[in-house]
Length: 165
Image 1: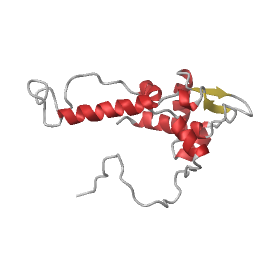
Image 2: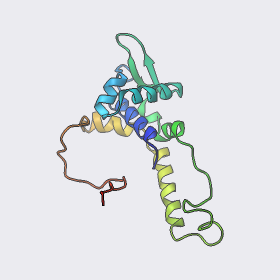
Image 3: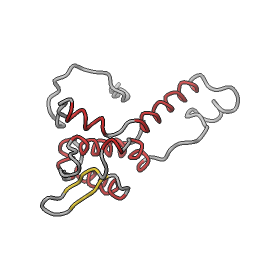
Image 4: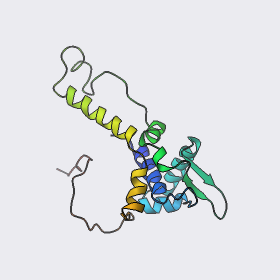
């Protein structure tokens, strides 16, 4: 759906949303990285970009750290996506213009358009309030990365891992 930078930036922002209390609580890049199981230098770099875009605020010093710049319900996922991804507006099919676009649509064309439309809608309509509400209102405590899995296997949106043949 999107690249690792975007995925990790959303993870960092979601952690800040989980602790949102009007911006009083601030987390360091290291705290966010540890909680999400991400490389700290990468999180620091992402937070810098998010701060430059006006999505997070940073404060130096003993009470320093990062907080969302606005309330979580006023920041949608697309704002993060737009920083790290180039929106593909090309009418060409991912299978090549020779397969789809030179005549009748390919066998997957309509389904791919539907997926793309659903993805855009998800990014534009979903705010970080979902993460705040899950943590604070519903009591869903995020499990720190590396913790043993206690829930049953569930379907993933990721491609299955390749096995050696």
